[in-house]
Image (cartoon, rainbow, N blue to C red; front, side, top):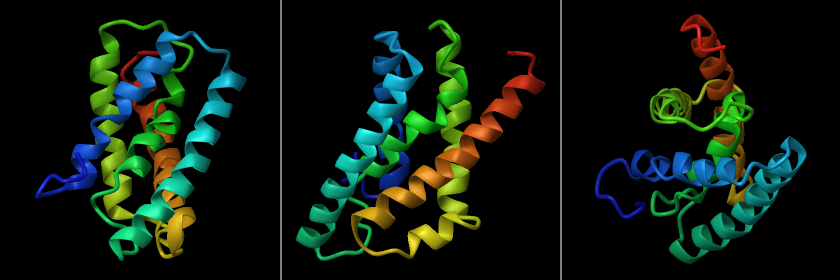
Length: 146
């Protein structure tokens, strides 16, 4: 996914909902889910730091671990909802909100984007994911899903 010639982050983000669907399928308690999200973040710091050093780039497009892991935050508003066919369209909304904030990089996303190494690579996406999760929640309320 990260080797896509155009928009590797966008293509990499497509795997995020798949990861979250797998986690939702396990019917984990919220604290366990949040712990897994934190562990994915910390693993991502290591993976992204190593990858950026090996590739000689600050935030290489070839590495999409950050986009994938961030979806554990983006889809938090629907954590307690039963899995159904709605997950597909909710994932599309989540994807659109996340890509908006990941590309736009409003404050403080841009601040974290400027931090070098794995911490910065992961943090800017997780902060963008918080914005996306809030917007997803509001959108779902407005659509009468909650």
